[in-house]
Amino acid sequence: MNKLLFTVLLCLISTTVGFAQVKVTPKKTIYKRPKPLTEYKKSFTITWPKVSGVSPAVARKIENALNYEKLFNFTIKEERTELQWLEEASYDVLYNKHNILCIGLTIEGTAAYPSGAQKYVVLDTRNGTVALPTSAFTNRTELAALVNKRMEKAIADEVSEWKKDPDMADLDQKELLGDKVFREENLVNFSIDAKGVTFRYEFGFPHAVIAAEPDSEYTFTWAEMKPYIAPRGLLAVMTR
Image 1 (cartoon, rainbow, N blue to C red):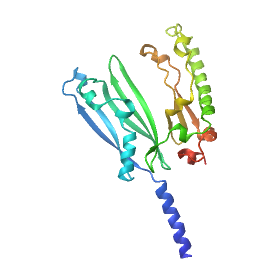
Image 2 (cartoon, rainbow, N blue to C red; image 1 turned 45 degrees about the vertical axis):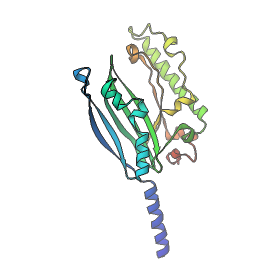
Image 3 (cartoon, rainbow, N blue to C red; image 1 turned 90 degrees about the vertical axis):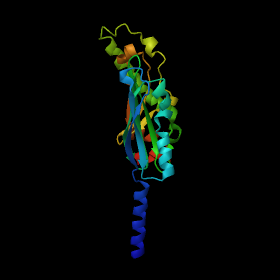
Image 4 (cartoon, helix red, strand yellow; image 1 turned 30 degrees about the vertical axis):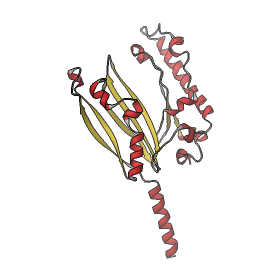
């Protein structure tokens, strides 16, 4: 009996360790610009995600995967001297359970007008590996077609709104949307949370008509995603 109890406790401990959450702590850093172009460009702020609760090597690997400079293709040195666009970089933890960490990162800045960008990263916290569509999903061509149907509806809904608005009635649908198709390569910018998976598409409208863009985020529940989740992939635990 004691041996059996010990075995059960050992299994419970192993399970707990295997599904433990990592700790992500914000580290806010303000970077001064030695020669700001304007009084509004004197500094910018980056909130770095600092990871603990795993081995130092895995923590470094996760932090490297969440590096703003790499994800958004800029350098702090250039932002302090030449570019001077960035105002703030921050992140949100969208999911942190079952060895899965999903973080959304955002950068915001101003040039001729305010703008920003977002990236989403899904990681295996056991080894710091980024979950890519090729390892996370199966039937990817079919999945992309499913997302495209959702996008087509979003486009149709938005175009119908154009016709009701005098300021948008003259927009050229063919020019702005004629070649927009959600393809398999677009699966890469996905995020997850407890409810399901969200895919995104960048329409790339000019800033002057950015308000006319169709909805660019398409969320599918875990039940809807079950046929497309790789059975041995990181996300398989979400559909069991």
